[in-house]
Every structure is written in C-alpha cells, then in structure tokens.
Length: 347
Ligand code: DAH
Image 1: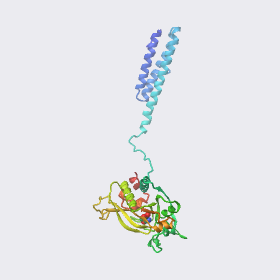
Image 2: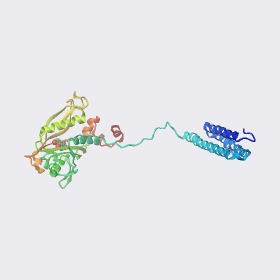
Image 3: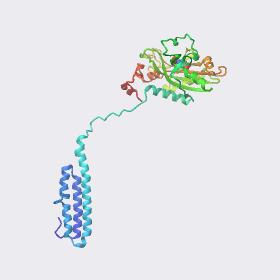
Image 4: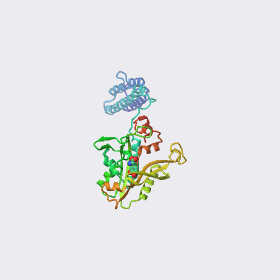
C-alpha cells in the first residue's frame, strides 16, 4: 500500500509493482470467472487498485505529477490490454471448446480423377507422342464408304451385317472401329504420316462381361517411303515394353481386310507371367492389339500412291488394356459409372 503522502519514487515503484501483479493475475486466470475476479481487484471502478493509484496522484507534490501521471497511464494501458487479450483467450476456451469435437470424422472432400480408360488412353498417346506421332480425330457418325469400302471390306463381309453395325440410315452408320480415321488422314495430309486416333466405336453387341456396345479404341497409322514390317514390330514391341514394363511379346498371323500381312500382338500374361492360368486360358499370353501393313487398296482409295508409299497400322481397345492393368473381370465396370468402383481404381 502507498502511504498517504508518497514521494515520486514510491509512487513509481508502486505503479510498477501493481502493473506486474495485475498482469500476472490476468494471465494466470484460467477461466472467465477467475478473470472477472482479477479484473474487479485491479480495474474495478469502485475499489480497484488502479483507481486507488489514480487517486494517489492528488497526494503528490505538484512538480511530481507529470512523471507520476505518465506512470499511471502506462499502468492503465498495460493492464487493460493484458486483461482484454486474456479475455479473448479464455472466452474461446470456455465457450467454443465444448462445441469443437476433435474426435468427429473429417468431412469428405470429393476430388475428381481421370477415368481408368482415360488414364490408359493418355498414357498410350504419351508413349507414341515421344516417337513423333500426333493425335487425329474423326467423326463417330460415318459413311459406309469410310467405315468399310475404303478399308477394303468386300461387300459381303460379315461385319457389314445388321447384327454388328448400327446403321443411321441413308448410308450413314456409327463407326464400328476407328480405322476410318486412317482414310480421312491419308486424304488430308501427304506422307510422312504418323498419327494416333483415340475415339469411340459402336457395335450391336450384347452388353456382357467382355463386350460393350460403345467402347474406346485407339488407331495407329504410319505411312512413309520404305516402311516395312520391321518398323511395325519394333515400334509395337517398344510400346509394349514401355506400357507394361519388361515383358515378352509375340506376333501371330491374323487377317484384317485393310492390312496385308496382318498380325495380332500378345504380351506375356500379366497374372501368371507366362506359366498359364485361367485369365489367359492356359496359354500364358494375352492379346492386346491387331496390326498389319496397310493394304495397297486402302492407300489407293485414299489417293496415296501405293507404289511409292507403304505403311503399317494397328488398333487396340484401351478398355481391354485397362482390364489387364487393373485386373478387372468385367468390362461393364468401366462403363457403369459406379463411384464405388471408380474410386477404388482412381490414380
Ligand atoms: N479395326 C480393327 C477392329 O476394330 C482393329 C485393327 C486391326 C485396326 C488391325 C488396325 C489394324 O489398324 O491394322 O477390330
């Protein structure tokens, strides 16, 4: 306590002591009640210690009042700020905390991802892009000529049958493969040509475990002078190694109207590593694409000199490849848009 007639030194010392005690009391207050008790003791407007300090100013000699007044103001500022800051903290702790349940599970944030078939297409396109291929697109509604005639299908070919092709009327149809993009590209650009044509193809197939009526395809085409079957084998083998990792590949003779000779490419079964299992029907191999040297009639139909130029082409189904990669038993999983499945395979 201050005496009734304090000196300036006593006043200053007392003001400093009061400030320190008050600030300590505020900071130590654990909740709003404790803080209020401390506030009344130091800042109360009837008997608060700060009020008494103010009153004591009047008992000082007149020439000490300026310094003492400044000390009083400092004490007041420091105490009110400390009190107010502490008030924010304890309020937060006592009023907000009960409503903040830290054990509550976080709210799920939906985040988009590429569809697995799109992931596969992008990756395949990326590998061929490095080899100088660019992307070409064509219409999904095609003419019979682009879809079949220009691709050297004989008029009585079974693929023209109503059962396979979805006709739109007046010579138009939904393309049954992406191969017509070969013809459109050859008509439009002069060789050398190296393109990849991803897109959707349509067939009147039942929607079952291995067929979808609308499905993704990727067509590839390279046309230049002096292209041979060696280019085809080397490029597709390189692709398989890049896409699947080190794997054995093999080519089997096949037949397509638009290629001669034709070959299908197999990679070692992803599941059994070539030993033979139910997924590869005991063969140890899985077919991933059809390919061949572009038939001279196709080049000629598109207006390309088949004496001067040769080429190779391939077609594959990215959904089938996605099934191999993600080990899927049923192609419908890739076309059903079931979020539970898609989230499992999202990369
Ligand atoms: N167009 C064929 C199909 O849909 C796939 C195909 C095979 C495309 C061989 C090609 C190829 O370019 O050379 O079944």
